[in-house]
Length: 260
Image (cartoon, rainbow, N blue to C red; front, top):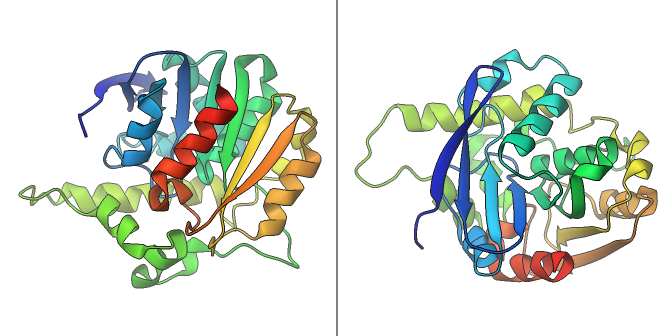
């Protein structure tokens, strides 16, 4: 994989990384739980047909410590809105995974004129006490990879420190990403997004890994029912919660088909 162009934008006084690669119509992507410490095959697959733009959320890898000044869900939404705008994604197609998918859905609901089409991979934001999602913050570290990916090695590869780096900063950045996610979505990913889903008019693709051990299937169904615009649900065999890690080509193909 060739490396993407890397830029940075200022959000609330903190730097956020923005990756860019490919040519064509713009397609933005917001990463899921844990963020993206490195460029992944899924993004390369998208970049073969589109100009892929990947802003890092505050506190995630590449997002410095911007999460420390975000004290409410509204703070987060305004920061994400600024991030997308400064990354040049006004009016573009947007995709996201888990946490990132929840923010993409929020943008589609609150600022409908800023998005064209949406692709949501296992989106967070709902909670059903009769069918609760798995709490990733309640897990022991060795158990987390198998909850997030059907193939735990996919997660381990994403989070592995680069060979020869030997930097104490690497594990700190990864821990910070989990802290940022908790600041935005704990407890149990419930942001009461269901109240705002009917405001989404953009055509929305909902993608779930058939082996998702974090998000129940019922949550994706509830997204589809609540969204006022056209929706479609697809399941990816052999994929877990972060389906873009387990099956990068299959998920990319679905996103490209939907946003073409």
